[in-house]
Image 1 (cartoon, rainbow, N blue to C red):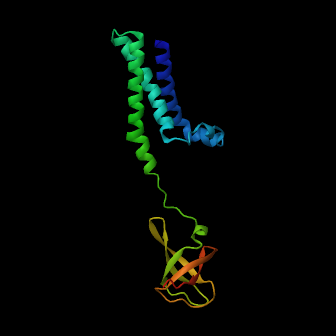
Image 2 (image 1 turned 180 degrees about the vertical axis):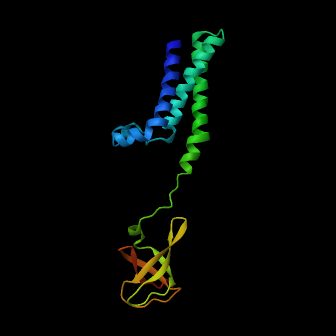
Image 3 (image 1 turned 90 degrees about the horizontal axis):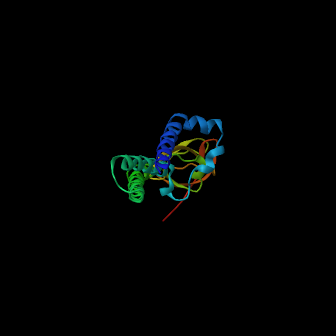
Length: 176
């Protein structure tokens, strides 16, 4: 049984070393061949929590076997409970908070088509102005031109009709 515990402990340590030192390099070199190993289903199946549990299982099993006089079955049960507690702890104290912090403020210019905006700098009939567009939880200022070729005054509400060459082509809209 001690061989199983030692294998789990050494396997977990090697996984941690390889993933920390060579993880990005291997992913780049293999061009995503191992992407099928990532668990995109349930968030509690994250490799960090799973491998952490296996490593703790091995370490707890070795320590309980060597430093207690408990039977093999009791050592196995306690090692499993300790590993489960460690996995749950890693998930709730590390993995889950990290998942929630991965918010991106990036947006695609093409995704702005159909968005409502407010004109900040008047748009002449043949020229450019500036609009304020709500994107996610924030706002972005963008260069804009009149889609219909008519001047649009500052403060007007507009809709983005088209995005071309990093310019928003807008039309005035009356929402009242």
